[in-house]
Image (cartoon, rainbow, N blue to C red; front, side):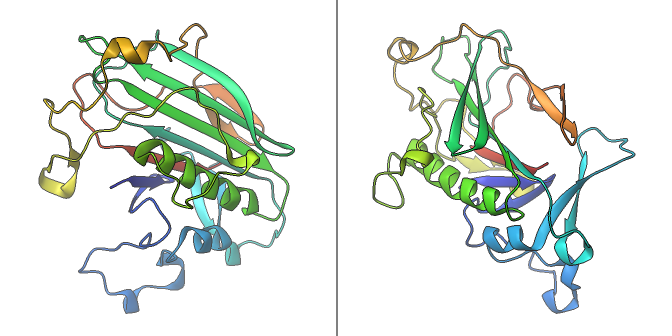
Length: 253
């Protein structure tokens, strides 16, 4: 199971179907239109846009979600940032790598990878991919297209298969030069928070993986503060000894 955090909200089922997960005690009939979560991600993209908080006090929530019917401006600059990370054992910012690429014509894509090794070398390596894209097309068209590419990319890297059962088009092929290592979900604790058994190990031998690693360049960690403004920021709120399932964060900025 994968999870998606959208603008600070944890949504079940990373893929579009089942995105509108709600607690059993919530009566949908009692909710107003703006409180409903669309059934698919595509519907969400047609419904909503995100606006930056002008007076921000909590750094972890810098944007607010606005539904389109509340907006008078039908045209806007659209951008999307996505982070994906796996098993967390340790966080060492000295072992990082970065590069640039493109996801489709005229739309810039920035990819960043973070690799974390534990005391055993790399048997519990963390590999994280961050994507950034923007454009001036119809609101959220870029995000919808990018989301489709990301969905297939993640599926291919984690499961080893393309859900479309065919070769990805050139604009959807993201050459990461690394493989995303994941672990099966072993158990769950109170609150249904995913937990992974510390003794499970399905990764290849560390020495076999190291040949594919390139860790010579530092990774620029940033966050978007406002339109066209990017500043350095802290990375994930994870700590040594944390155990997490594969998680995807997805923010419209």
